[in-house]
Image 1: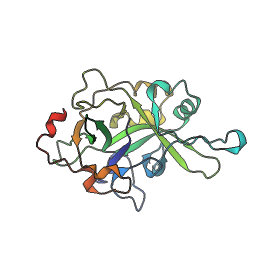
Image 2: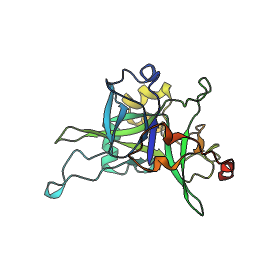
Image 3: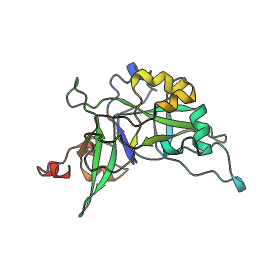
Image 4: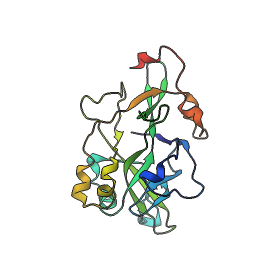
Length: 226
């Protein structure tokens, strides 16, 4: 499942998702429990990655942060089921990272969709997600919905992971405000033109959040990873 993700440019973001909050900036290494931009039914806002149940459990303890919502568990897990019915959102991104383990090391891979109309850029994407607002501090938080790639998915090489579910721009409204059964149909496995690109281990540290995180490896043998 995605461990980190990116939003390397804010260009044209407002055309697809709406007005961006003042002070927003590109991100190259968004990590769990950090604030990031999402689109709710009403606006683009900052929320924390890590869905926190709005209630408190026994002894007043908060529940654990939920980073991922597997498609297979949406209807069977009460927290995810409730969030799916009442507070779906879109995580604004243009790629994500996974770590591919080889015999000798773990290689960070940047999964993104090159934009054919803007060479050197990646497409802005809306990842399906569910959100909740905690009753104590009113902090909005979210979990990424992830599902299996369809059989024969091109472009992901040896990556063995569940992928973020991408909601097409034409379906944003149906996802955000449509009926649950319509929204559920949108999280079916889908083919996305991902490019799996080995990048610098600079991204391994959550303290690093700059363009170096997505720099391709210069090793001419990197194609052997695929």
